[in-house]
Structures are given as structure tokens and as C-alpha cells.
Image (cartoon, rainbow, N blue to C red; front, side, top):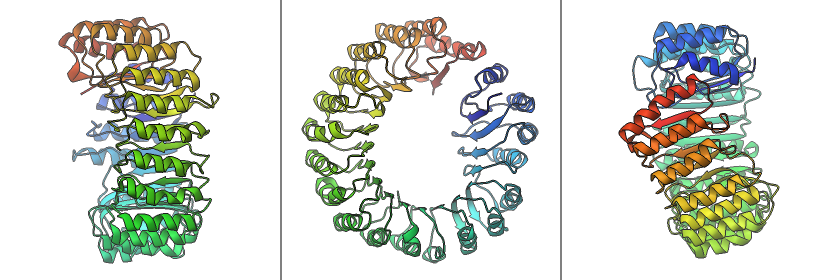
Length: 576
């Protein structure tokens, strides 16, 4: 039987029918919603299903009772296939939920486990002591992610030290005891390469305990939100002894200003082979931006592949200063400069400096103020970006139809053999004209994900786009998101139902959230779902519950159960 990659995300009141569906498909997202559903799946896994990944994700998800949770855990532990990954990352607010999930976790973890993410459980000290015993059994564990209000020793340092296979550890806490002992144990692990430390309550004394000397860590992630700059500065200074082995540095969302920014500059200057740098959501200031650019130019010449400097309040002048380093970064593949109030002058500066980065594969400039004038200056770099795969320009409200057309036509001009992975032009006011340009790009290069939310696209634009999709041998479109556009009248719903639902062979996911659907429109959509020619093509359809007419809501809710019970292959998401 094919291995089952089980992400627990969707409603499962119809567990019996879904279990049969999973048997045939080999993989499908699931969510446990009742003890009965859990027992059905416990029997399902006990029957020989090979489970590779088990995940609880979402917010306020329902949970099994203790008996059914233990039954499922035992079934997972004894399943014929290796349980390689367990992730319990839901935001759990119900006090009775956590003990049940912990019981399931401790029953299913074993020597075959490679990834353990329990960041959603907020472990107490007693739970940590149990976790130490679990870790002793996990001889193949590569990644460990723990979150707790208070991390006390409880043998945690000794427990981590015994897992010699560990390569990546993430610790999130509000208060920690014997941090130095835990860090020392992590530093001695022979294969340790990645370390993330996240907290909302760190003192200078705690930061001073972050002694990394002797650690050969290649990837650091520090996130100290709601703390003083001096605390982050102290923590960054502790990383300096490991600077020569550092490859990836993530300091996102620390609210670091000029004071801590100077320490960040010193660390970047000391890191001679840095591949990735993320300093987003830090109001660094103009002087630090200039110094950071100089440090990158001198120390990361030829090595930097990813630079994220979003939401740093740079403006056009800051962008001109900080991206003076780009000509010395010929290996740059990913650039994020979102939310920096970049206008047309900043866009021109970015384009001029990216000319020396022929390997650019991802460009994210969302949340700025670029108009068609700035879009025109970006055309040369977009034409020559031979490896471009991801382009995100969402929330540039003044881009307009002309700006969107300039960008999309530039991307569509060359390199037909390389399809685009994602285009996001949501909330850019592209209208029907922009949708038509998107259609031309799909014909020329193909695109895996199209995000066109809130763009005033009417039926003419959607028709042009879908006709382009239908008349080309483009690769499958994983996701088409046209939410919150004026396409909710019955005639448009009829067109969408006919082109994307009934006849579609290309689009795998269609999101129509925030689109008003009348009772008649709901019946049209339901009929198309029942009568579609290629049942397995459209795998997910999303609509908003509060935008459905009374009868439309009724017929689609009934269809939601029918779809899975008859194994037609589409998940119908009716989102609250």
C-alpha cells in the first residue's frame, strides 16, 4: 500500500467514507473531529496502512477523548509503515485537549521517528519529564521543535544530549531554567546544524547564557519579540564566535532599531560565507541600512543567495542605500522588500542593481506604492530574469491595469520552457485588462498558482483568463484564487461552473471566497460538481459560508458530504 501522508486539516464527520477514500488515493488531508472518527482511523491504521506523517494543525480544532486518543496512538505505534514525522502545531485553547494529544504522542513516538514538532502543546514541566523518556527512544530523530511556558531542566539537557542524530532544534518559551546547560548539550551534538530560539520574555541575564562558542551551527534563528534592544544586541553578540560557520541568519520580527542594528551589522561583517539573511520587521534606520549594505558587499561577496529586508521602513532613499550591495551578489536568487513604502524611484533603483543578479528566481515587492511608471522600470530585469519562478506584487494598490500588463507581458516574453510557480497580484487594481495579460502569460509560460484577489475583475476578465487556460497545453494550475472580485452574478457563476468545475482538466484548486452566491448560483455550482467530466481534476473548491444564499448554503452543505461519501475526489471547503 502506498505510504499515507496524513495532514489533519479538514472536517471528518464522515470518517468511514473518507477512510475508504484514503485507501484508494494513498494520501489525503484529514482532521479528527469526534472520538468515533478517531476509532475508525485507529482501526484503519491497524489494518496495515503505512503512515509517514501525522499532523494536527489549525485553530481550536476538536479532539478525541483520552480513550480514543490512546487507541489511535497505539495503532500508529504498531502500524506496518514507519511513523517518520509527528507535528502537533494547533493553537489549542481547551484545557482538556492537551493531555489527550500528549497521550497519543507518547504512544506513537518511536525509534523510526525523524521529525517531532510539538510547538502547539505548550508543555508543562511534568510533560517535559515524559518527553525526555520519549527522546531516549528516538534514535533516528533529526528535527525537534518544543514550545513551553516554562522550560525547566527536568533532564532536558541530558535527554537532548543522548539524541546524537539531531540536526535541528527549535525552542520557544516564556521562561527557561538552565538554558546554558541545554545550549551546551545542543552544541556538543555532532550533526547539529540548525538552532532557533524564540521567546517573548528574555532578560539580559538570559541572553548572556546563550553561549554558542564551540557550536558549529550553520543556521540561527532568533526571535525576541516584546523585549528591549539591548537584549537582542547581547544575544547577537553571543553568536559572533560561530560567525565563520554561519550560513543562514534569521532575525525576523525582533523590532530591532539602530542600537541592536549595529550589532547585527558586526555579525554580518564577521560571517564570511552567509547564504541567507532575514532582517525583516526591524526598524533599522538609514545609517544601519547603509552599514549593512557595506557589510554584505565586503563579507558576502558571491555567497549571498537570499535577502529579506521587508517592513523595515526604508522608503525610496533607504532602498537606494541598502541595495547598493546587490551588484556584489551575483548568486542572489531571492529578494524580499515588502512593506517598505517603495515608490517608483525605489523600483528603478532595485531594477538597476538587480542587473548583476542573473540567477534571480523570487522577487517579492508586495505592500509598496509602485505605479505603472515604476513597473516600466522593472521590465528590463524581468525580461532577463531567466530563472524567475515567483513574483509577488500584492497590495501595490496603484499599480493598475497598465502596470500589471507591463509586468506580466515582460515575464511572458522569454523562457517558455520554464513555467512560473506563483504570481500574486492581489489588490493591485488590475481589472479585466490585467486578467487578459495574465492569460497571455499562462499561454506563454504556464503558472502553478495565480492569486488575483480583490482586483475588480469581472466576467470578461475571468472568461479571457480561462479561455487561455483551456486552449494551451499548460502544466496543471495548482491554485486559482479569484476571491473578492465582482463575479458573483448567476451568469458568471454559470461560466465558472462550466469552465472550471464541469470541463476543467487543469485547475486543481479554485478559491471563490468572499464572492456572493445566490440560491440559483449555488444550484448551478452543485450541478456542475455532480456532472463534471474529470472527477479527479479539481481537488479543492472554496466558498464563503456567509456569502451563500439560504438554499445555496443548504445544497452545498449536503453536497459536501456527498462528494466524499461517493469518492468524487474534490474537497468542498465552506469557510465560515
